[in-house]
Amino acid sequence: MKKIFLILAMTLTLGMVSCEKSEFEKSYADPSKISQTTVEKQFAGFLNSNQIFVLPAYTNYFVVLRLTLNRYNQAVGWANEVNQYTPGAGLITDRWNNFYGFVAQFRELEKVYAQLNTSDQNDRRIYKIASTIYFYDHAQRVIDLHGDIPLLTAGMLSTNGGDYSKSFAKYDAADALYTKMLDDLKGFSDELNTITVSAGILTGFKTQDIINKGSIDLWKKYCNSMRLRMLTRVSDATAFQARAKAEIAEILGNTAKYPVVATNTDNIQLNVYDISTSLNSKGFQTGLEDWNGNIASKKMIDHMNANADPRLRAIFEPGINAKGSYNGLDQMLDASTQTALIAGGTIAIYNRSTLSRNQFCPGPLINAAEISFMAAEFYLKNGNNTAAKAAYEAGIKQSTEYFYKIRSVSNDNTAGALAPTNDAEIAKYIAGNGVNWANATTDAERLSLIATQKWIHYNVYQAYENWAETRRLDLPKLDFQVDNSNQQKLPPYRWVYPSSEIVYNTDNYNLVKAKDNLTTKLFWDVK
Image 1 (cartoon, one colour):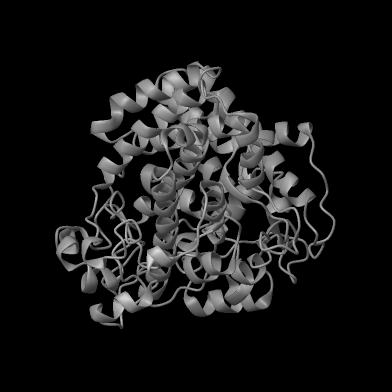
Image 2 (cartoon, rainbow, N blue to C red):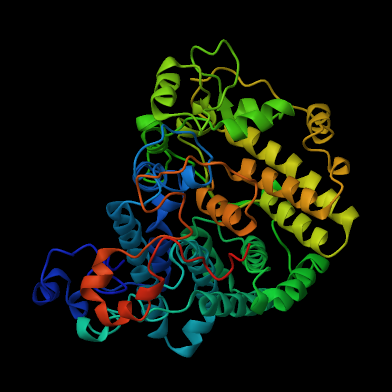
């Protein structure tokens, strides 16, 4: 496989802010001198190139999420501090650079594929479709962080023969990117229903595909589930409302043609099979636990306690001095009191055996519970209360099963044995006052029920989706201590761009400069 990790990939100098443009050419290999590769090898390398943002890893959790999204969606509690709502420049740059290295890997795969003759391209069409689905999944995350980003012409240094002067990428509008991705995914969805993959190609695909093990059926479900997620995300934006309504109805109304992830057996995730390989979740422990990054929030714990949530003991564990009680950290307390409570060991933490010390913890991409909650929201908005209730309750059951299933593969018992749940316990939870669908008398109250369940389900485990959805719905309602000592007094609506963009991609950056602040909402954030 070609060893091309173009750190700047998009704007050419990402991660090299301190160097001069004249030094840039010396930092990259001459594409004509790189060893031969194949579509198959590029595909495997591409899927593996961003594993730290799929499998729970130190870089993602400690460097990126600990100080940002996990706090902004209040999936964790923390001791309040000055300037706590401004994402650090270093972590933004690190996340940006990693993503554009991933973009460069995708472009290299495209380049190799484009060099094949027509017959070979047709034979390997499944690699093109699957890689683009996976690429769009991660591109959506970064769009939802920043808004407009360079993408369609990003990562083209190798394609441009190593000429960096031709490879500076313009910013693409976030709504335009959503449109293109939705168009392409719809086309892939239809194509996957008729695609023929020869036995020989399929054998190689099964070997190289670390996500779905070569299952065409799972790639169909991944594609349509992504469509559902993206359509739900834009469903309140005026320009997308009609499209979202029509296409979601089509997907949910014709699961034979447009199958989605409907059970936990079909969850799209990166599984760990052998922790002696590079595909493992060993970095989750330090990533989540270091510097008290695993503290439970009062808002989440109180809701789970009040309604006897069967997921409570699977997702959290009591503080060492809490005598078995689950207590969350009140985010409205002063910092000194919060610090003392954390040090006192009475605050619950995320369950180490289920999550952070579970070295077999899978890397989530799309799972059944979130699909059910999306369906519940759609049915609710379109007047089908019966279907909304059924989907909502199915999501709760799937979420509960999901976390107990994750615990079942763990190789750690630090938190002690986990008492199993059962249908009766789950049914009792669903009937509880704060969960029961029948107790909600308005659509607004019902939407709040769905949003709260989605928030609990995502917690720290799917932080990017959690932050996007809490912004989009403005639910559940979260209280934050106002940082009056800083211009950014509450959590931001988006991330700013890294300084490397200002320095090296100046002309293109200047076209989006007016949007580059923490207070500009993304196009789908209309609440």
